[in-house]
Image (cartoon, one colour):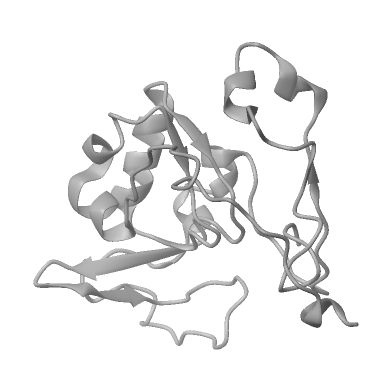
Length: 183
């Protein structure tokens, strides 16, 4: 039986366990800034927080610097600078300028966003690399093979062990893409 055909283990989610949580969308974060995050003890990012506005990055930075616990659980995070149209908030603009992994090369004159006039491209080119926000960043890609996460002994430290209550030592030793959760 191939990995793709193996049944997935049953996962009991937060709702079934009675764990309260809120969902904050990218639109919420851009519209409301750090105020939407302040009431929460912990913020978990989604799996692919790649496209961010300046206001969104400011909100995450303010939350983290104000004592919030920011857990980055994704890949390619905070990579491309985007703009949103206030009149049409569902519309975003991205111009993939000056490098990075992309499907096309922008022509001269196409590096600036029409919606806000800002230089687009990689956040690191605007002195806001993801490494400065969360300590990790995307720099290259290759074969896609997944593996697992393993809790470190530091997760038992009483200062943050509460966050790992009920969490097994080995996480993500299965997956639909690449065979595991961590590429």
